[in-house]
Length: 150
Image (cartoon, rainbow, N blue to C red; front, side):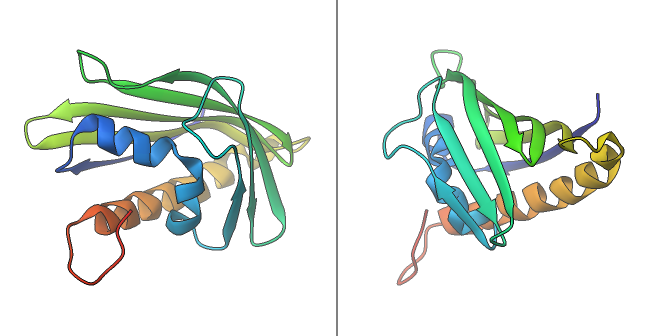
């Protein structure tokens, strides 16, 4: 298994962060040149989302697990990438910590369909993308005046 993990801590409640990050339409603001087609409601297992990056790379994902933060505060959502271009898994886990919560965005075994040798370079590329997306998420969630927030 080849995996990339981007992590951050943010000073917001775990449930708020989980809801904002699993609302995949928000990812249009987190990942440059990406457009998202997904249901306009809270995610549900079985939802299919299509993300198109740079007008070329189509990533169809099915939500296969979704647990909002409960009494223990941990929330997790997992998607399986179904193609037609990318295969693999993505997971977002939000865990409470003393000053808010910790986010782990994990991508596993990402390959271009039919090209297994793409696993290592795609893992490096996606690790960079998820780190940048989480950094942008933290900036957008920061309280500001006269600026849009997520």
